[in-house]
Image 1 (cartoon, rainbow over the protein chains, first blue to last red):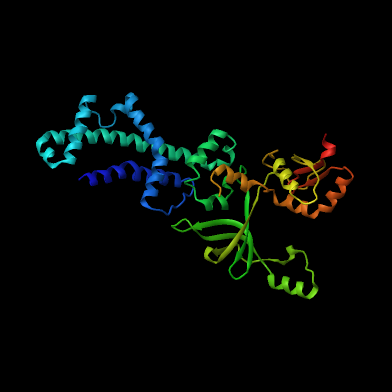
Image 2 (cartoon, rainbow over the protein chains, first blue to last red):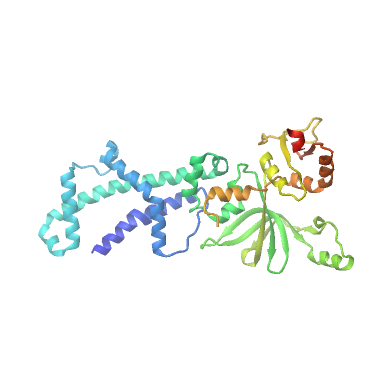
Length: 308
Length: 61
């Protein structure tokens, strides 16, 4: 009987709220699929929910409305302690269960009412935090400059968000129009390049495939042929041939590696400075960014302000 | 191994510059070096009229 009660408590206080939390968070960002033992799963649930559970406990103890609703009935601390003693000892011993008789059932229903109230607020808070975190995660790139949010996201967001979502989308960039471009080397030595249009993960969280937009293929045969014949080659850009297809799907099982490049649409002076400092032979310099140079622009002006 | 989301974000963002700027820097590497030797700033212009000015440190002071 005790094992049954423990299972019910674990399900009610860990597994169900954890599933609720991940489901709601998953409506905003793809959540990471975990592979592990039951113990690891429970540990993760405890880490995620401990703070929320404490808040729910404080709420039903100290906030007047939460103290009584839902499942309101006249209650006292003495009655509560007695109910827990009766229910606990009855679960433990069948003899005591028989001794208590109808008192056990009265105590059990009151205990269920109390636990139901705690669970109601606990689940509500879990849902609230999942939605709050999910909403905040949509703007992670912009909000991460605020230290408290960044710390909070480090603890709560990273353990839940799919690593492929972080790597293959502009999730971490303040500029949400950042283009994610990849060079993909396949098992047959073919090299593809294109903008990541979408990606898919399997139920284990592993990458299942990639959709590339405006894909190009590196003409390796011509490159090697010219290199062998002439000893030198044309500029590498000339070997990239467009594929007559708007979207190209690549199966992850055929991918050897991915070279990922992020191309923001706006310029950040400090990023350019850092980039240039790594180039060989580049002397120390400063970078300034302007919206446009003097003279008539040949294209319409930017709709978005530049970041400097 | 990256343990914090903020570290991962910083890692991914490093060296991430617009494609037009990357191409301009590659194409005009010699021009930039020459201008810097003469202590001259270089201005690169993007497709939407945005500009990035590179100034050698001595000129900044």
